[in-house]
Image (tube, rainbow, N blue to C red):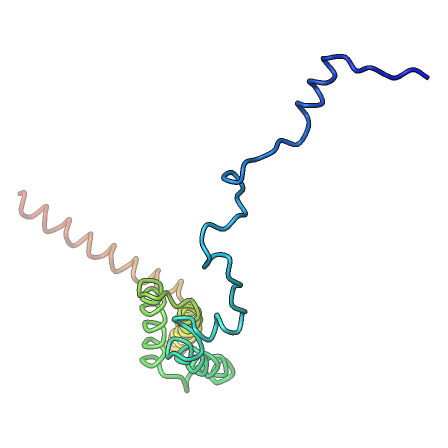
Length: 169
């Protein structure tokens, strides 16, 4: 029985493609201190001890503010003549201002930003409904109002042109 001899080229190829051994300093998974090696806390304890966790006002304020969003959504079924324009403008402004502010403050409160965003959306829908209702009472559509405004601008331009002609003469 003969043994198979490997050529020196084959031996270097095997060595080349073998898994390289790493020194302990190059291993990424090794912890450098005891705190990193300690077990991580569970999901519930992280939520409980979070700066915006269940124990803080940063959690409960947005939870309670969802009641305003739900009340605004329930107003979708009310007739537009019974809705308050100033109240819904205030809801829209509150939603827009506080959405931005929630992303600036520390700790960033994404739950509060989300509820304020939806509050602004609900307020915008309601303001649009109220304004379209008020325009329908006047009997003019948006196109009619635009045409009327265009006629007024045209008349003002003609008046200015005539005044300019008088001044030039």
